[in-house]
Amino acid sequence: MTVIGKCFLFLLVFMFSSWAYAGQMETLLVPPKGPVQAGQQVTFYLLFTNLSGEPMNISLPDKLTCRISADGREQILFAVPVDGKTLLPGNGFLKTNYSLELPKNASGYINLTIQEFDTGPAVFMAKSGPDIPPLVTAGTAEQASGEKDLVDKRLEADRVNVLRAYTLMPHKPNYILLASNNSSGYNPEPFREQYNDSTIELDDTEAKFQISIKMPLAIGLFEDKMDIFAAYTNRSFWQVYNDDLSSPFRETNHEPEAWFQLRNDWEFYGIKNSVNSFGFVHQSNGRGGVLSRSWNRLYASFLFNYKNLAFGIKPWYRIQEDTDDDDNPDITDFMGHCEVTGAYKWKDHTFSLMLRNNIESGFEKGTVQGTWSFPLWNYPYLKGYVQWFNGYGESLIDYDQHSNSIGIGFALSDFL
Image 1 (tube, helix red, strand yellow):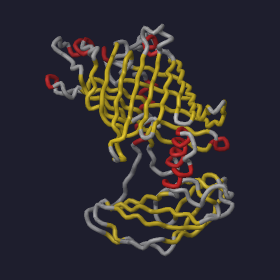
Image 2 (cartoon, helix red, strand yellow):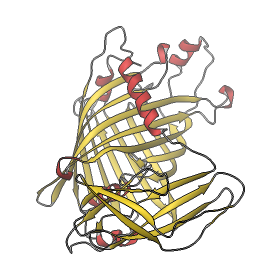
Image 3 (cartoon, one colour):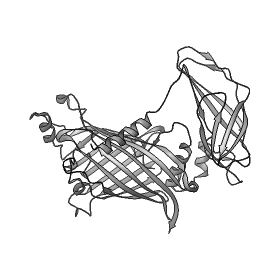
Image 4 (cartoon, rainbow, N blue to C red):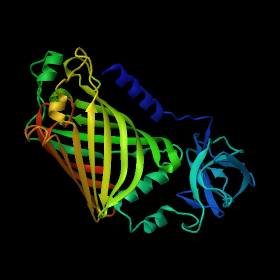
């Protein structure tokens, strides 16, 4: 891993792990959901968490002193409690709602702080005019956006969540494949060389999972047209059924990245260009010796959508490394310089297709990946998930090895 990659990875880990606890009680300020109407009553709440095993009574003031600021203007307002619960159970939490009337001249991104509790600020969005309801909740937001394209709905959900404190949002699909079989087999030679053990054998069936989260660094820049995000993606390959090797992790790929994205409303024959992004990504397997793999890229991403269909084009440029430090100088021969991904949603089913390096390699070293996520009865928190991969670069350790794998498991989040 290069020095710039190590520094970038450390920065991302630090940002994602920044959470502090103080004393026996923690207080979180949660802002109103979604855009709210200026001049109307809005509701926010305080979430108290008891870190001890003993119940405690909270002394709640009759009103909260609230400071709101937007566009350099500050105002002091007072919020009154909606409910009067004060008993906080041991190792439990208590949610207390407060209401205040938002000034008619409040618009844009509103920074809210309260004087009585040390919670830090919360941010929400207010709009003036009669074009939106006084308060958009999760249920009414879904109804209000029923006629919008799925990509627009996903972007709206991100816009709501990005305003909440301590928010981590899904970036790429999050899933686990309980069993994924590679009919091409996995190459044990790098592991034999690294550990000087000619008896190492790898199973063709293993578990695979991906965890991908993002967080906002800055939002609403340049008249609410640009946002800046950072993300981390972990993709792991686990030889869980290989008892001869004590079920080791065969490979783990770390992928921190940062980018700025520009929202767009360009449309041609019903096809809308929703978002354009430009960023930097580092990817490595965090290993040394003959097992070390890494590369750094600058990329652009262009997202289009038409009703229930979304597709993106993602070209990239590999940042060259010194010859002595480059563990995989030919990686672009197998990974190419561009990736095209499409996703289609039918009812509660989502189908996706990814193509990479097919035309560029003359269809010799290309990659095709297809996925299908489907509902599990009426269970809202998980979906069934099937993934098929054929080509090169399923993992960094196998970037120059052909894989033909299919797996089944569960998905926590998908493209749409």
